[in-house]
Amino acid sequence: MISIELARALRTAGLRWHPRSGDSFVIETSEAAGDVFTVAEMTVEVHDFPSGQLIGFNGTTEWALDSVDVSDTLWLPREDQLRELLRDGFRSLAVDRDGGDPLFVVSAVIRGTLRGYEALTAEDAYGEAVLDLIVQSLVTEDD
Image 1: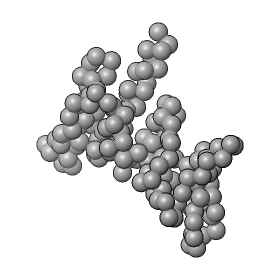
Image 2: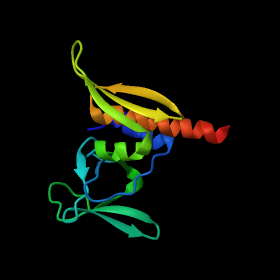
Image 3: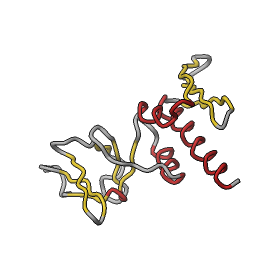
C-alpha cells in the first residue's frame, strides 16, 4: 500500500480523487485516523450532493460515524491506478534484490527523459513517478 506521506504529497501536488468502488482511503479528521477503509457498494458508498461528495458508512456498528466529507479523507491509490496515471510514459517495473531489502524500480519517461524511481514498495515507486510527472507538468505550465 502507498505510504500516507506520499499520498499526501500527491494530493498537495494536485492529484484529485474521484471515489469509486475498490478505492482505499483514510480519514484524517477523526479518531479513526490511520485506519484504512475501502469504498464498497454495500458498506462504504459515495454520495454525490450539490455541495460535494460524502462517503457514507452503511450499517457501521463499530463506531459512531455515518458519513464523512471526501475533503476529510486521503486517497491511497493502488498500484494499477498509479500505473494508469503514468499512461504511455510507463516503461517497466523491476525488483532490485542486491543487498538488503528488495527495491522496486519504476522506469518512466517524464518530459522526454527516461527516469527511474526506487522505493520499498511497488506502490511507492509508482507514486514517486506520478508525483514527478505532476511536478514536471506544473513546471511546464509555468514556463
